[in-house]
Length: 115
Image (tube, rainbow, N blue to C red):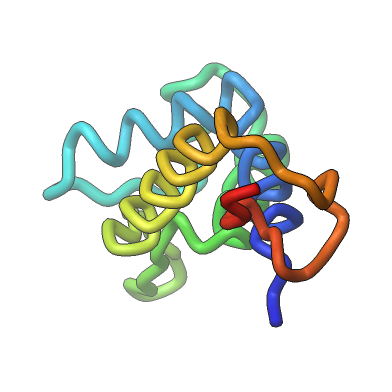
């Protein structure tokens, strides 16, 4: 069983960087456009290696899709995963106000504990 709290923690850590939030915003606000690493680097005013690292982190949590066109790789938002992340964050906030008798230290909890 995948620990949902651990997964949520990793997602929030990955999204907890201003540049990565800007990448998500650039792609999500313009769904018909894809961007390559050099586009991202130019728009953010950062180096291509830095842009690649940010993209890699976002790909690792599944929020970006990639497609190859010739030698270039283009990225877009993985909309189903992005909305699944939103659903998990919403569920966490709802359950955050419910007392947990397990101190979130058991597999039963996974922030689904009703107390």
